[in-house]
Length: 314
Image 1 (spheres, rainbow, N blue to C red):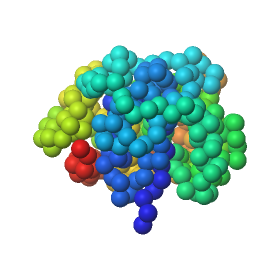
Image 2 (image 1 turned 120 degrees about the vertical axis):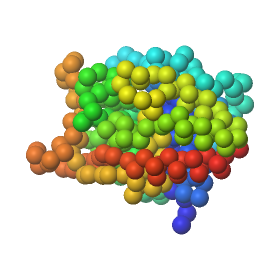
Image 3 (image 1 turned 180 degrees about the vertical axis):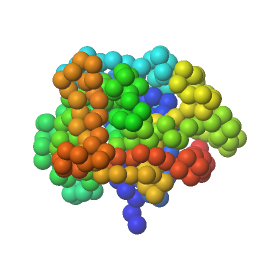
Image 4 (image 1 turned 90 degrees about the horizontal axis):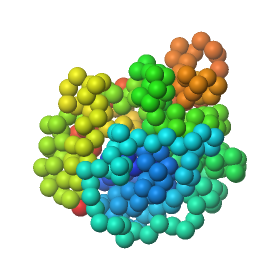
């Protein structure tokens, strides 16, 4: 079977780096067509540069990187240096990238690439705010039925939020773009924090990753060590979630995930709850089930698979 063609839309982020490297270590199953960057964890200038550096770390200078929207559709950009450090990928200090940044805007690229590909061929994986994809859908609605699936890391319900009491960061940063995507009719799979909190990266696993000895593995372990600094107020042990990598894990091994088809809407009106993903878990509204909600992960299987695929990287 031919590998699944994916576009990764991202705001790196150490966990974004893990998601990208996990995918690039799985060429038999996943064909990363391009990476598009968006303002999110840190400003766009840094997320685009980080994406360039990550593909270079993986030895995949052939993958084009596009810069997209520097801010959300409506709100001002809010960033998360308090989690990821000033660069977004603290723990990794590479030289300036040699992989070029493409001249075309990421939104224009998404429209052109999706319209020019066979219907149902491309999956879009969003690891940050959904601004680029939402803008592309507004610019050219004909892309919507051509997308195979949108797989995102974002949202939360049972665990509440991590940016506000109600909202997870990626959705909270640009809830209006998320609403465009969720309301579009495109097949959506959501790896929320309810899901990502069930697969916690332990110091022991990071040690196994580092022991692989490759540059990609060692630098990923360094990023993981920095990423674990944040969260001591929330998690009882030194283990931490590696959120965005759960998107890649789902693409490779969906059987590792507990899943349920639900209606999901995005709260836009209240200043207290804007960005909340309202999950109709029990189908009490009778609304169309527009989202495949990932609830839990087989953590042992997930981390074994990720370690195996990092072993394929230089």
